[in-house]
Image 1: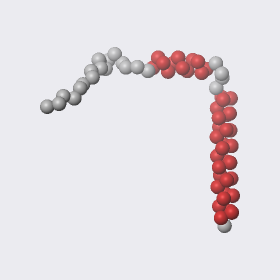
Image 2: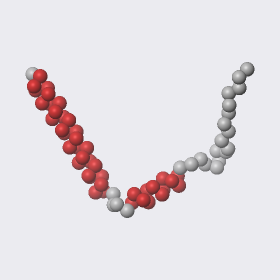
Image 3: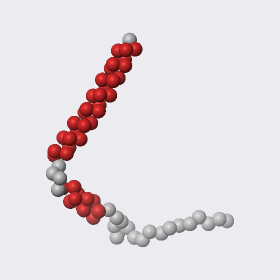
Length: 64
């Protein structure tokens, strides 16, 4: 019985590893290699604080 449980666990681990590699290579085929640079530029443009929010004020704790 213990041998069967070990076999099932080892097969499950092997299946998960193979599936993760298959998904990784599938994702690599979907995106062309030149798009990664364009994606990084778009991400940089969208980051930051909107001017509508206002200034950042750093409050300090005051001991009484």
